[in-house]
Amino acid sequence: MQKKIRELGPMNRDEKIVALVFFMTSTPWITDRVFCKDIVPKVDDSTIAIASEIYFL
Image 1: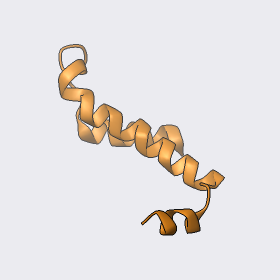
Image 2: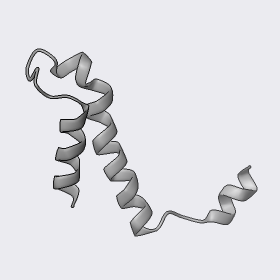
Image 3: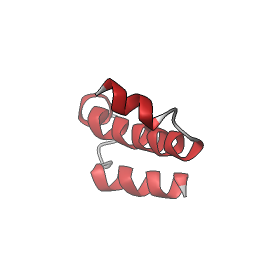
Image 4: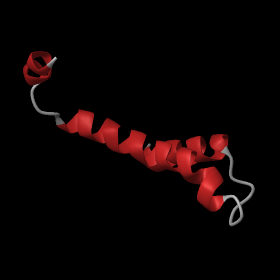
């Protein structure tokens, strides 16, 4: 497994952007029910996805 990872080499710019978009989108999905439910009750998974799409477009 380590050999295959080394063969891939370091992440390029596009891979880093995809990782950032994934992190910035998945974090609200995971923490939405825990932290934001009382503050903004109208926000659901589709709202987060659309906002992420618009922001990162």
